[in-house]
Amino acid sequence: MARRFIVVLAHPLPESYAASVAKTVVETLRDRGHQADLLDLYREDFDPRLSAAERAAYFDTPCDTSGVDPIIARLRAADGLILVFPQWWFNFPAILKGFFDRVFAPGVAFTHDLAGGRIRPALGNIRHLYAFTTTGSPWWMVKFYMGDPVRRLLKRGIAAFCAKDVDFRMLALHDMDRVSEAQLTAHLDRVRALTARL
Image (cartoon, rainbow, N blue to C red):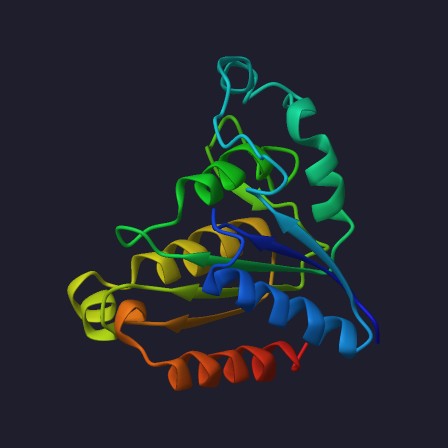
């Protein structure tokens, strides 16, 4: 069954390895008959800063999302969300964090109970959330020393709180600055194989 995916790329360099990963994802999805909407945050000049007005209206009903409504429409039209980004300082690039801050707003990604503070998932259309990422650190440092913070944030936080029963997967290439060309190519093959399961 053909589905629609939004592929979010968060890297400032158009010739980056992350861009190659995003291209591989988009091509694989389209080869399998799916629709792929590439949202390149840098190329589309996305402003990651949550404005004073947006923050002041955060608990209003509805929340003011007018500054990002076109992106919200693209997210709501998708059956799956695929994130492509490097990890910097064991975290998201600032532009991707800003994407979550501004686009994953109340009434869009979740609803909240103002009395009890609980939040309920609101992105019922998102059935798949995949993340393809790279790190400059070796896997053991990311996993054992740091506790794999990006995976935990995505799986336990964003995926669990915003999309009920979502199929979450994450594929990382570690020690990025020291891998060979053959390893880079092999990783793209893994990206292609995982994407082809959608």
